Amino acid sequence: MQKLLGIWLGLACALACAEPAGADSINFTGSVLDSCTLQLASSGTLALSQDGTTMGSEEGSGQPAHLTILSTGSHTISVAAPSLVTSPSGYDPTSQQLEVAYQGLTLLSGVSQGYTSSPTSFSVNALALSTLALNNRIVNPAGFAAGSYATQTVVTCN
Amino acid sequence: MQLSRRLLPALLLFLALPAVATAQSLAPTHGSGPTPTAIKGFRLTVGNPYRTAMTFLVLPMDVGFRHPVGDVEILPPKLTLAPGFTRQVILAFKIPQNSKERTIGLCVQPEKLAGPVLPRVCGRYTGVRLAGVGG
Image (tube, rainbow over all chains, first blue to last red; front, side):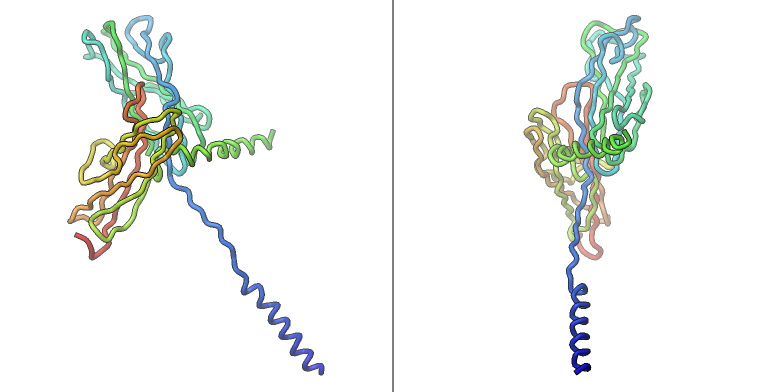
């Protein structure tokens, strides 16, 4: 009788012990795609300096442009040298120099670039919505003829 | 104060998440995959983060994003999106017969955007021909 009881107890234990081995594990999976968003939040404007040799977004009533950046994954933000896209017919561009400068705000506060006419870049990892303030200027010792001027800087997230 | 310092990044990320889902300009920005033929395709998502409807150009470029390249089909190459909306585009390109793989660039930029800054979002995509097939 005791032997039969032992067999039953052993069988019960085997069934109880086998239970966890038969349990299913529940896995959660997910993935994050690399993505980048650039949004021009505000266009910049150029104004003439007091000495008449610089048209810039930090002169007089000029305003910087603001670009918002949102990134998942690692990306490079490249800022190309600016180009002159509009100027009046009487303007002499021979001695002009076009320059761009930028300053990161909010989560990009560590990013800073002084005025340069060369392409520059910086890296960002996963980045919540942040802002980059860009300034452009045209320096020309020969001065500026009356009319409209416009520069363009290509900013690439890749 | 300590808690708010810890919570702030999480809060910012939380606030940004809905924007990731509805306002991305280009995703993914990197891609690589095999193909049994001489054509490789990718499905990409282009989004409009602006507050107005915008028309975007989807341009095939070299890997440095400087010059347009050929033997590439993008459908559609130009798309108008409502604010906050996304749409999928198909990128397909040929891998030259004597090459095992080809990498191309692709850039999304607004068709018309007044102002001194032209924002572009670009990606690189690589198709790898499976060994012993294609041609």
